[in-house]
Length: 154
Length: 154
Length: 154
Length: 154
Image 1 (cartoon, rainbow over the protein chains, first blue to last red):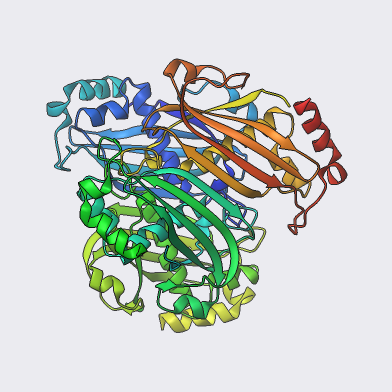
Image 2 (cartoon, rainbow over the protein chains, first blue to last red):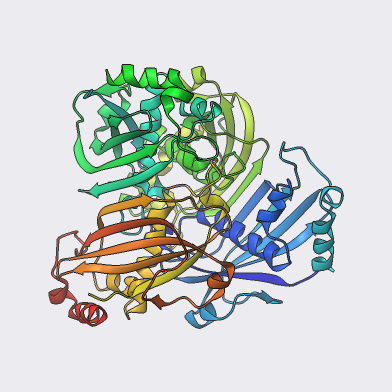
């Protein structure tokens, strides 16, 4: 399995905070989503196009482990990578890290080693389904996606 | 025009607050939506059924005027009523008010006179469209809805 | 350990849906929060009062297992109960279930047996901290809360 | 008054969509917030630092006019500029526009002329207050901010 992580930078927005003065824990789940969407795009297929092919990738399971708080206006990087995949399922893991303003302004991309101060880790599991939410084998219904995945995971 | 307001009670949730210690201003727009959805249901047709008939009611215009802050765990009532309607458009106005725990536990319903401490007012304008987002005349494509509206506004 | 669940009813709102036509998975995390807040209130202390006493209860860990989709306008019940507690930590588990309009209009309260169509399950772990996010023993800093908890868990 | 707009690029996220298949109208209000926060940063003071000086800038009034829908994965630019300011108040206006992938990957910055397909316009009004939400004159309590504003507005 590849050890390359996709890095997606985010600036913490005011609406993400709660009255404890930190980022509300619910936001991490959508941060994961943004990072895995960009992981997919980076490897050559937009999630939007998958849906146009009639393939959806709903979430079966989410976990988040919170280590430290993120604060308003912090620069954070959401690192994601695929940890497991098959023609019927795919799993991602995530690390959310606080990074510096300098690191924030650098180009987003891939890294072998997540950097910055660890704020949270997490995982998500997904299943390929068709528009009627019936499970499908992605190598049958959209072989071009499975090929890209195999190549990415090399 | 009728002067009856629909009253929809809400408990302020933790996620609705921001680090100023108040409800983030963006939430009022979705509070309006909840109250107008229930206004519609109360008059005899669920918004869900409208969509099943192929009629959508997107928002054309929103205004919110903020007077006082709402805080975590506050009981608020979102009052809504229709201020204008035609076969092609409909307009709502809103009042968000802080109410007591006693008023919160009372039955939700209609009132002639919004009560409680005024926190915000607002308006929304909407247009009837079909699934392709083409404007439609509601009295033509779904006369049963227009009749209910005329009766409600009687 | 007690087997009583708190039941919190919610109507699925339009903003909770995504373009798959189902409730976006991120919303379940905040639904859990609403239900556990009301669990706490039902047992005699508002979470708001805990914060006024200088005690916060941040989330350490969240898991969600998605079984079936919730749809716009569905009536759902979020059942929650405490599964473990000590002077330093507390854990909750959750079940989200689709219920009927009749069940929705019934009084919210406690139940021995969650009912309705199971949509998702989940857990959350929390730690008591003070305003500086230092871990505290709740039986030392707020014995009245610990007593209520011991009584609730009987 | 200056005619320079700040341009803030955003990728439409899955969670921003609703079951109409478009971006839920409530998101525009928080998009405005992101763009005006970056307008402020670009002119030399972070909103975070303003709060550290004890100055808050709550929203008094919001309007949004919706022209066309944004869709999942669209690239949008939120243009913002100050239209009015005084020692006690400040007003912004906004344009949300769909831009191309190429325009999206360009550097974010300032422009004299918003470009792309117009999706929505809007305004927000704000008042300077202290930590107790008492109105303040910004040129008295934080002259360094007022100077920056005067310079920006030239």
